[in-house]
Length: 267
Length: 275
Image (cartoon, rainbow over all chains, first blue to last red):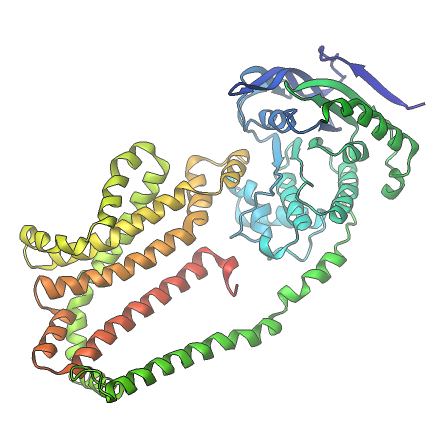
């Protein structure tokens, strides 16, 4: 059978041993549209958690509330036990549309977070170079964003988020503007990167396959109002060849199971 | 640390972009075309002058000779010395004041309500009609001429800067905030660079308007500098000299705009170099 731990209902989930991000009773309304209602979630340290759901379920809103970029109408977000309501150095964001400065080179874009913090030029460029190599862009340091493909631009976005050395990386549908081949490649790289970097990832996606492929934990959100409908922990061995995962029994079963659960929300 | 991520394929795909020799050949082309365009213009002028279109219309060659004559006797240099003072002062003041005001209005609602309507009206108004009024208030000196330059140059600079700052890329602002940028950093590192193409478009229009302003002032307020040279040669029916003077100020205005574009690409938008 499918080896997944399922927990039902929006009731508060008992906190895992070590959770770095704690979301309590978050709600958000846009006009008369209730985007989120009473979200309680814990994000375990060092894990990759995906927020998955159909469009309109408020997954990006929830991510931006955790990032401090959107203010919630009610509820609290705590990082390392400390309540936050604005962006902070312990979180870094990867944007769906990359948000790169077109007038700046790859190096300056990657080092931008450090530049804003006042790190001196030599030091921040040294750090930037390291992370540019880490995401596989060595040799492209002096290129401008318009000279790069979509996939490469998002690697720059990822390197920028890594270079500020935040504990939590927030990724808002990072691959949605990247073509399919590059996305597969990027997902594989992300799995490798995760094992090297001791970071917590919170990942928003609308792709079931993507969520199951890369996540330790999948939070399923249901739309109108956005609520937690299910939490799934796919137990997939990612130590070997990433190509193999796509044919893994557990992988395929979990994808199917989530699809059966989400089907009702698709008109 | 060592993650092996392959980018060979992507690197290969990008190679033609970084290949300078491939783009080098197509670079010479526009310069050649521009020279042909200028030669064509001079040729048509020459023919029109020989027909002649009007007895007051000199040929290109006569105008060119007159131009060197004006250069040689120093009258052109003397004229520019006096014209450039209100022009440079007015344009520089307009540039700083205009970009400053426009930026403040783009960032600050109250400023927008107070200032922008005035400039919208000024831009729509036939501003040359104000020049007699400026003369009435400020007399016939430098102040009046500098003001004439500024009332022509300022509105377009303010309005362009304001619009550019207003329509700055929202996602870059959010990015700057998420990486803990302060208000100042956001303005200096995101808003102004992002707005710079539209600001520079405004500056180019403003500088061109400044040239119009200074010539108008010298024709309408008191005949000095270039305005005087034009009036003087017209009154003596030295049409070749008159056209040479007019052509020289058009050429100067064009060169200034080209220089401005060069500064923009060099300093503010290095990524558009060669694009």
